[in-house]
Length: 393
Ligand code: DI6
Ligand code: FE
Image (tube, rainbow, N blue to C red; front, side, top):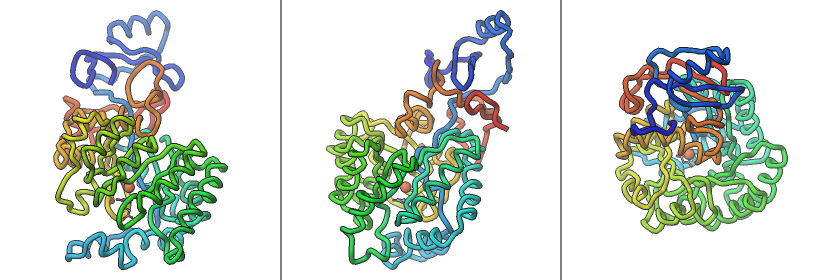
């Protein structure tokens, strides 16, 4: 939101001037109209629509093969996510389907998901790898992700999720896998320009804090920023680990201590709320939002779009769930998919607010007030998008 007296920084009857792909001026429409007339600048009147920054989905696993509907059914017949993972399903089953899929098949399925997110005003999208779990397969996922950013009018930030699950071929060689992910695959993929950030799943069913620390240290040596899947199913001190590594974000955080929350605040690490996974796994205890808020941790909201725990391609629905399930205010939910989401991707100075100098990525809404964006369930009030200064059709 631009600066202003109202909550959300609302400017009523406002105008935005765009030059190239940047915002050049923001202010009252009366003044904007006179300036435009004086300088012969074309004007587009959006007649009562609301304009927000383009939405940013800062945590997705958008590129994968297959789907996991049978596990959805198993869970509703009593199996837990951890039971299924330990029996070789879960992430492993998506790894098998992803390795077996063609590049074109992966790209087409991911593009269809990206389009659904984009239809709701998403202009920047983070995409993690993590379903390849060996060099060539991870490279393919990151290349598909980069391709989406080239072929569709949306910005993509890629994340090498090197420690997501231990692949079957390394079952008796954990340390060798962790070594290879950090010492060989990450430097190779980073050198190819495929990696904007890394991520590690720190959890009892995934990787220990020590294993994640080793991988994140390799990233730090290369100057690659980090995200951490932290505290989704248990508190293993992953928030403290993320803060210690100065991670851009710690994501999930259903389980985080007061010390963990303070550490995140001190490090300036964003907490990314992922209510789609909480909802799909029918978890009981939401993240301690009041604790995070009081500690001063910035809160973002994302879809976590993935086939296992969050088959969700609606960022607006994630905002609704962040409010209803986690107790975020609609204002926090909108900040969490704009200003704070930009910060979670290290893009806070470039986008996420309507301010002079920022990228002209804007979403146009037929709503009466901003809270409506979080209020609807399955409602899409997005009626237009400006991407890098141009109307997206
Ligand atoms: N946490 C999640 O919720 C996803 N990955 C992760 O680290 C789940 C991925 C999956 O089940 O396929
Ligand atoms: Fe995730």
